[in-house]
View 1 (cartoon, rainbow, N blue to C red):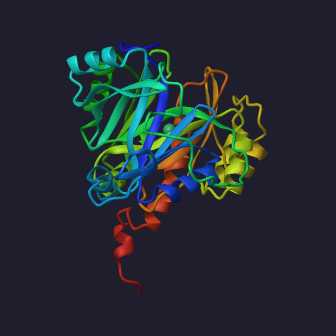
View 2 (view 1 turned 30 degrees about the horizontal axis):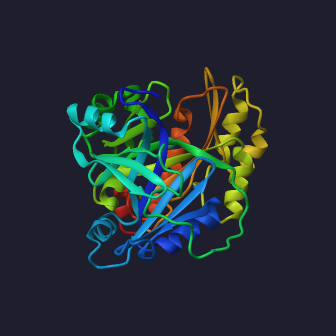
View 3 (view 1 turned 120 degrees about the vertical axis):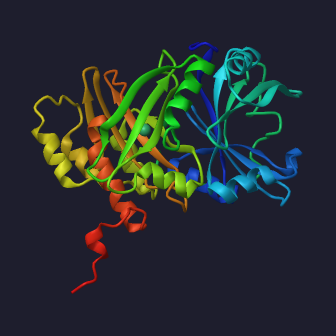
Amino acid sequence: MSGAIGIRGYDFIEFYVGSAKMTAFWFAKSLGMDFTGYAGPETGVRDRVSYYMTKHRLKFVITSPISPNCFDVSGFTQKHGDGIKRWAVEVDSVEEAFKYATEHGAVMVRRPEKLENHHGYVEEAAIRLYDDTELIYVNRDNYKHIFRPDFCEPIQKIAVSCEETGLRAVDHIVGNVRENEMNLWADYFNSTMGFETFIDFGPGDIGTKYSALLSKVVRTSDSRIRNPINEPHEGIKKSQIQEFIEEYYGSGVQHVALRTNDIVQTISALRKNGIEFLTIPDTYYDALRDRKDLRIQESIDDLQKHGILCDSESNGYLLQLFTKPIGDRPTFFFEIIQRCGGAEGFGKGNFQALFESIELDQKLRGNLDPDPAELMPPC
Ligand code: FE2
C-alpha cells in the first residue's frame, strides 16, 4: 500500500479504438498478449465490444463501438483517434480512495459502485484526468472470475502465433498536456492522491537546438506508480509534445512503458513480431563505448544490434527503446524498459538521441516547421 489512498499498483488500461477485434489481434500478434476475456452482446453489453488481454501483470482492455448510439467510444475515437480512455490503480478501498481524492479537489466522473454477479463483486470509481481521460480506482478482492461481471471467457478462440516477448508489467504512464498545464496536473496528482514530485525537468534540460519540452514526474512514495507529465516548450521548431496535442486534439496519454527483465530478448522478439522502433544512429553507440564510467552487463554490440538505448545513474542503469506510434496518428506509442540495479530515472542521458530520432519522423510527417532556408526556391 502506498500514497494517501492505499494504492497497491497499476491495474488495467483501457483503449478506445475503431475496431477492437483487429487491434486486439495486433496486441496478441505483436506484443504477445493473451486473449483472456470478452464483453459484448453475448454478455449483455449491447453497444460495444471489449477484449480483455493479459500477460504476466499486464492487463489491457480494447474496446470499440458496435452501435451509432455508443457516443462515449465513437465520440472519443472520432476526436482523438485510437487512444487510452482510462487507466486504473488497484486500491485497498475504492470508497476511501474516491472520498480522499474528491475531498482534495479531484473531479468526479463515476461514484463508487459495486459490479456484481454470482462470482462476487468488483468495486470501481472514476475521476477525471487530462481532457478526456479517466483514472479508475478498482478493487477486485471479492471477485473470483474474469476481470468484471460483464466479461466472460473469450467466445472466439483466436489462435495467434508469435515470439514470446517477456513483457511483464507497466512501469510508468506518461501524459502530454498543453503549455502551462503541467504544474496544474502535477499538483492534481499530488493533492488528490498523495503523490510527490520526483523529478522536475526545466527549460534547457530536455531538447535539441530545435524543439523542447518540460516534464515533471509525480509518483507514489514507493514508486509503484510513476507518472511523468510533459508540456511543450518554446523552440526554433515545433515541440513533439505540441505535435501530439494538435494530432490528438487535446491532452491525454502519450506512452506507456512496459517492463521486461531481458530487454535484448524482448526487443529481438518484438522486432520479429513486426513492431517498428525509433532508429538510433551508430554515433550514439560510439559515444556509449567512450564512456569510461559505464558499468553494464549487456554488450554494447548487442545494444547496437537491437537499437537499445542505455542510461546510467548512481543507483544502476536503465535500458529502453520506444516504438513508433502504433496507430494512424502520431500520438500513442509504447516504451520498452529494463531497470537494473535500482535505477529509478527515465533515461535523461538518452533524450538528445531520442529527440533527434523523433524529429526525423516529425519532419517526414510535415509536422516540424520548415527551416526558412528550405522555403527558398531551388536555383
Ligand atoms: Fe517513458
